[in-house]
Image (cartoon, rainbow, N blue to C red):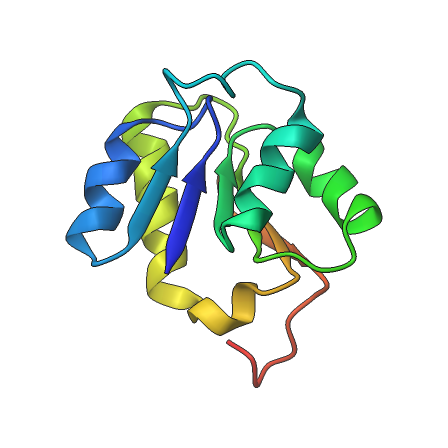
Length: 124
């Protein structure tokens, strides 16, 4: 599976994901760094990559702007730290099958999570 790191997502996620056998795209240091959210998200979708971000706006906008996409995971913590974000990402990778992320935006919070569209009990 391919993951695309938003600029605000910890670089250490690259190591975690690679160790699990995933491909990682990180635009930091490229000409795309600093581009508009929609542009960056479109690049992720061109690569068929699940988008990883801490930008809460993606949870609200992607379902309205993109009918189909590879998936989005938004880590939205009150006091984010690299360790806490990576723990939430690990938690999600253990629970959600890659195919279940397709066309779905998941927001991981401190003690809860929410998905749009919601999961039914058989898709987890």
